[in-house]
Length: 222
Image 1 (cartoon, rainbow, N blue to C red):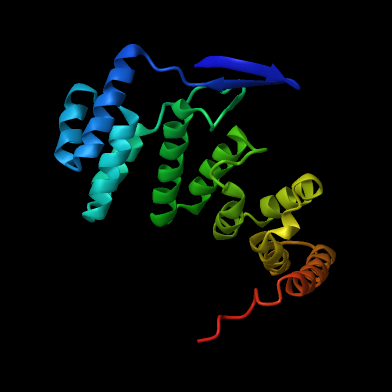
Image 2 (cartoon, rainbow, N blue to C red):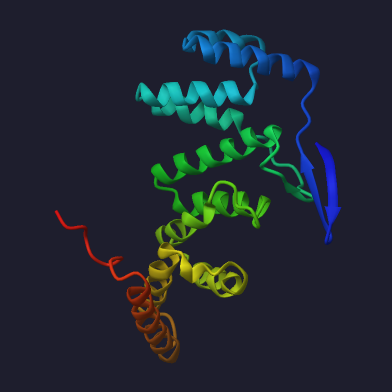
């Protein structure tokens, strides 16, 4: 990884590929243009950890309904855990594969019924570049938080980010946050005053959501 810049106490990095990896990338682009998946298989025999090839072959397996192989290839493409000292810049081509590998792994985890783990991946992707959010994780993170029943996290995210990101202007947050408050109010292990407060907030926020997005709670007309 190469340090790009440091500002406001944050360090921004980008991946820097070796010459050998760049050659593999060129062969990958040629293989993609050939429209023949077997050419990517041949490339992986000499470059078994070329990320773009693994992701492309994973998509091919998924289209052929070989979900297990597709998951294995994405898992192989995912980089090992490393200490992140800063944020990765999505606009640099070298970082895109890293983001996509994490995103595809997150998607597979959700489909396998692992919403809590998928939520953690979503948090990781968002944390890499929260200001730009290149993969639009803010349009997905509330859904995963609800599926994972992590209502407190969703509410806290909304409270902390509303001031500078206007999350209430996003239809998904406008409806998911009051739902989180309502579901929180149904938890019997909470004190009654907290449950009552959550119900009141849910009622207030859903009214605001329906006022701002009047068609949000209704199915489309046939």
